[in-house]
Length: 444
Image 1 (cartoon, rainbow, N blue to C red):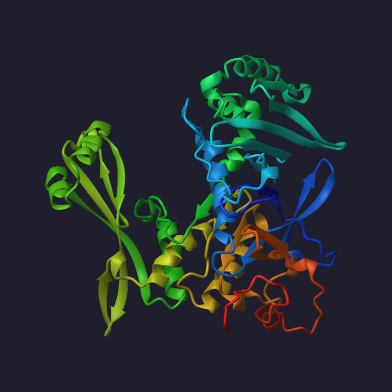
Image 2: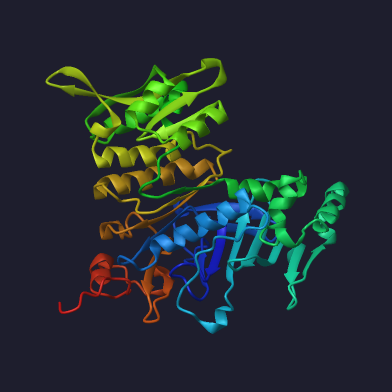
């Protein structure tokens, strides 16, 4: 579970902003929180977090910052390359040209960690991993780069707790961080070389799933074809939500690769890349094509079919025939499936309300809350639909407002900072500018 996150110098985010999943309201309804046991006692953590604000305020930049950090941590960077960071272009001198990312989280080993790093376009400057003890956070390793750009990594005694071999390997690996690898994170290097001590940390970052409006859920048709329980869940959900869909299925068809490539007008480079890989899966327009050595020049097309009842007759639709709303539900419904005690995913959804009616958005978020009772799953989303700012369905602590200062940098503020009276119409107050984070239309 994500507990806290802070970031600075990324896209529209200039100076440091901090986001927290700790509730500040002492009498918050228990349905909105999950109790976790830590070395420092029992903590309550929110299961949902929401961001509201005008267009171009930086809501997406916040989600993108976590997406960037996750990919940088999990996928690593090729030696000798830069970091591909997209920094704030406002030129604040006190930002020192470095971007900082810091996460506090509960990992799958039920330990609370703090992990962070600072980078510029060329390299990593600082990196640290800490673990919560009854006396507070204690470091596992720390990395520093001095004024002469010499990197020093210190492995702490806590790192070898119950696993002295991990420390030995970590000590060896820190010596191999050469000049061309300064753009790489030490955490990635440890995990990539099988240091078990950092596996829970890396697996936590792998559990972060980001859904942008244009995100295509990977392997969805294949999953529908192979998992009958999942297929039934998607079918029942779409039917229940009034989309007109009464059932979904996945059909397959064998194709000749070269005939298909010619009709699709693939480039010679793309065809050569497929032939060199020999086996794998490619996705084009929501349809999946499976190719492999055993099939030689054949490939299997797998696509979703949607059953509708029209004039009492069953009619099949392709994905491109479905409404934007139905297609958006396909992006979001998988995260609600089979959420149990082992589930620890963190979903970051940009524009959760895109192409959806208010009632559907509320229903999805209500379902998430109910389904996450036994899991450690969380959802953090952005939205424009102000009708979701409803304190009958959402806790004040769940809601955050995003806006830009005159300097052009994004700021965030929790709704809990405002004194809300019991009978106050919060939607009207928001639209009247009571909490900020509303569009300012010149001349109106």
